[in-house]
Image (tube, rainbow, N blue to C red; front, side):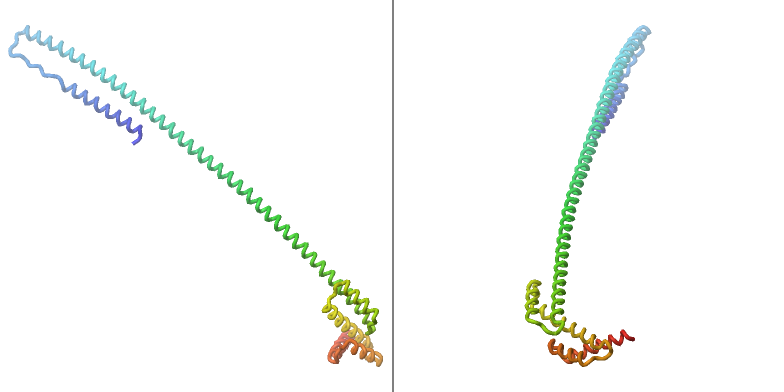
Length: 260
């Protein structure tokens, strides 16, 4: 039970007690015994005394009732004032508590907002670091790829240059000691390995032999001189009879296709 309800209960209890006191006071008067056969003078005197007594009692009763009424009104007024004061205090207390809760909620929301802002800033900073790291890795990968491509391109150019030098040296199917020395120097300068050198030699010799076959069969038949030249190249380049027939067939089919 709240303080306001308790004060109201006390006021009602006080009212009830006052009403009970009134009822007891009203029912508390004594009955007057009438004397047997009084004389008229005595009867008048007694009646006057009785009227006087009753008037005094009534005046006293009225005074008491007025005092009780004032006391009751004062008690009610004080009780109402106290109840109103308690109600006002309770209202102020409730308003203060509500204000405190609102302020606490506002502080909490502000703190959460600040926390979220800081988290967002930290997240963006982390994303920026990750982005820069990815860009740096991509840049390094691109540079490595470009360097590798440049290296491969330079390697291809070196191989092509060496292949062209081999082709020039083997053009007549003969390799002089001077040409061999030049090729060795070039191979060393271009860092051409033994396996690469051997592969390029075979490739160049087959290309030269194929060009010689095409040159011999360009008129649709081969001359004895061309045949002798091809025999020398085949022997020098160590080309088997099966490889010769395959290359010759390839050249003749190409010539027929071009003439068709």
